[in-house]
Length: 315
Image 1: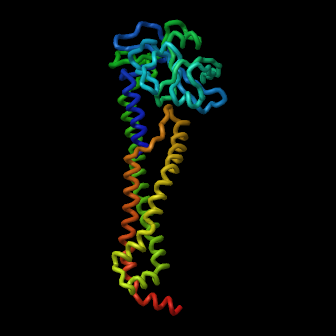
Image 2: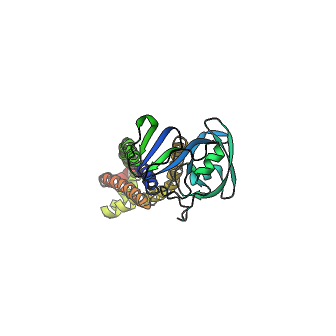
């Protein structure tokens, strides 16, 4: 569920950074005046030099666009009168403002060089630049565009469009596609809880079996049941707690690997963060499993007879 919420949050934050509701992608280049309430843009697919598997969009937009809210990591708005690289692409290329990058257009594998002007705090894998510079750099006619941002539905003939994308529909589709993952995570969590309970119970039972004579002697010496249970069953509490704490970095590394795998097939990047709330909830679940197994094992401790000490001495 953490992964599901993180993916949904990526799209919600993308929605907050966008003032448009619809994208209209045309079949051919256009240069006609755009309808009211819309802005032109162009987009092409590119890959990194030396790695055809990691592709991203290069987008040409109006320098003073009101459809996109592009900010850096400190929240300062970045004007698109320069080349803006989103953080996932910048991390892949290991670049900073002022560096020059080489990218390859996927349509014809031509190489192009761009000078990075800023890094945008966005999870989408894309590069943004002024539309006029985009057309000049990539050899398109002046004033042309391939798509429109729009805040409302436009009356455009369907035969002119490649497709229409609604931002709300994209988020709804992600929610639907994530539903099976939620069910799977709930099932896996339930199985993990059961397995943890069984393992802790078995280990605690072995400890009791190995210490039968000690438990028997405690009863002979007058220890109360509560004291015996505390001495025998509570000696693993520290180990369980330390094991959980040590497992957090391992979980972090595992999630990082999963997210890296997703990034190779997705057009966005998902930052790996562990919410302190979930750490606390996880710790409570683990300790509940431990306490449940202790309650089950108390019967075994209470069932140890005083004669066990005599049997051990005879043997």
